[in-house]
Image (cartoon, rainbow, N blue to C red; front, side, top):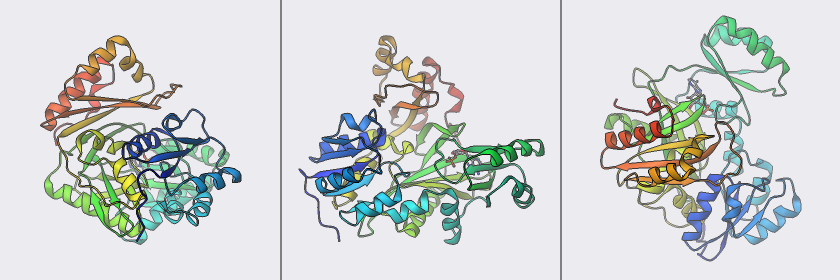
Amino acid sequence: MQSIVEPGSVVGVLGGGQLGAMFAGVARRMGYRVAVWDPDHDAPAHRIADQSFSTPFTDHDTRERFVDMVKAMTLEWENIPAELCEWLEQRRPLHPSSAVLRVIQDRLTQKQFLASCSLPVADFAEVQSGHQLHHVISRLGLPLICKTARSGYDGKGQWLVRQPSDVAQLERVLTTSSETRWIAEQFIAFVRELSVIVVRSVSGDTRVYPVVENRHEQGILCNSRVPASISSGDAEAARELSVRAVTALQGIGVFCVEMFQTQDGHLLINEIAPRPHNSGHYTLDVCTVSQFEQQVRVTCGLPLGEVRLLSSAVMVNLLGDEVTAVMSAEGSRETFSTPGASVHLYGKRVIRPGRKMGHVTFTASDGETAVASAQQFMSRVKIPPSVIPSHS
Ligand code: AMP
């Protein structure tokens, strides 16, 4: 059993994006000091850190200083080099472990692992070159989605092949790309996308959050609704599958299991994030204990917190330029005066298309009121309102 890291101690977080910043804010509220390591000087968590490092993750001097300073560590991004994590975890507790990262960092390894544990996933195959594509298509059929095995996120590094005429283009991509490992997956005509946050401690104690229903556009999460508009039986199945997946991984930390629900009600796991997740941001505003507080608790060996949903919520991401509408004087007056709206801005200096700049959580005693409130907001700030998950 991990001993408790006492408040007042320094905890380390690898990666300093908005997830690291939210972790740091909550850790500080709980009495901890926080060391952040992110090579990007502008990463949001540096502004909240007690100690911050912005050297590359390959810097050996920093890893010595970082590990000497902290009592325990966590991470907010699955692509932190696994070799660094392996070195760090031999010296101080680090959750999740480098072994979990090695499975998750590579989409193909991750899917092979899930399939080997008899966990349901879309049919998939490895693609190493353009030449193999025809063979893979004859096996999986069309449409299919081809993804780089490593370092893809928010829909980057993905190609959808709908019809035979799309194949030549993908062949060219595969032939000219510097990436050598790809995964092709059957394209799932899902009825909805769901996700569940699962927390698992060193002793195997587990907490499961309610099922969230998500809408993505071009691979990027636009909004999330909790609880999902599904039957209690389907919700229980999604939660149970999520716990099975995290337990199979022997994961310790906070995990998000993303799933597709098909027309006939089946669930397929799309991917697992070994950290708090954008679709779990609602927990900051409408749960007794947020996903970030659970991350502090697991990292510091504290008992896990009670998971209780206090109200329905819709979380709307502010992507790219959408944030400017909220940050103008008029926009902020309107947004801040909306009952039940909670605004989170990440303080990123550079706006890029699709970049996650902030989010707003709309809370209400029932789901439809939260949806209506979010929809009004989205039409005011010119976010297409059609993408909100509504009735089942
Ligand atoms: P990913 O980066 O794998 O999480 O994919 C981002 C988004 O692309 C998902 O949330 C889905 O909306 C879509 N997507 C990914 N894989 C598939 C698939 N096999 N079938 C249908 N849609 C997919």
